[in-house]
Image (cartoon, rainbow, N blue to C red; front, top):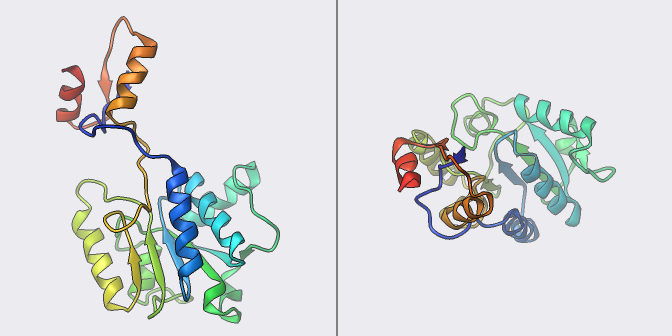
Length: 209
């Protein structure tokens, strides 16, 4: 059984290293707070944000229940490597200059109850989006969420934030293999029987052809 989600996409899926380089550049140039939103389950992406923050002497704050729960569990299990003094509590946020702050949050799909959207709508008691913030949407819209994500990006710009998303910067790579990787896997495994899975019907059909 083989993932078919990116069967339409030619070439290879880029490495997470590319995202790390982009985050590094954004952290180096951002004049104020950097707010990164991604999937709470994407531990490797959270680690890249922490690495860049540590390099530029920025403190990291987690916003959002699912992001907090996942990060805490990853820390306990040793899946996240966090230098001493990097992670902070939200109560400490207002004692730091903006250019020493990184927030990692949920909301990459524009969900109305997510931490990013609550910050944007001033529904979060501790953090609001303000002019001068740099917001990185480190994800691409899940099919069906495009309008929510587009609305979130538009509102971020209206609030005076600088926004980096997949159409303007390499802030995300997908977790699915593209055509050449799928072909390589099949050539290496040489299966007797093959079943495409995990994709829309067009992706499954594409793999069979």
